[in-house]
Image (cartoon, rainbow, N blue to C red; front, side, top):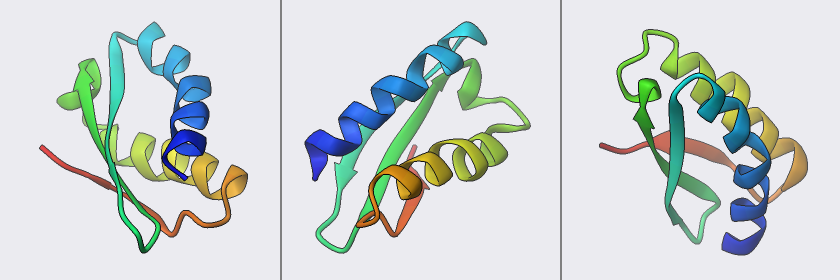
Length: 74
């Protein structure tokens, strides 16, 4: 499943990079939790939680039904 997650993140990444940020995949757990780190402008943006949940998590869940959630790690 990690390869599928990486492929979806690659689709999301250009939008984040246009705003000076990026996302790093840290881990995909056996129970479907994707752990990511927001970096660059995304790391301190006040909208980062919305980006994480409404953007990254929603896209991953839509494209990979096995994904149960996305968590940000520092």
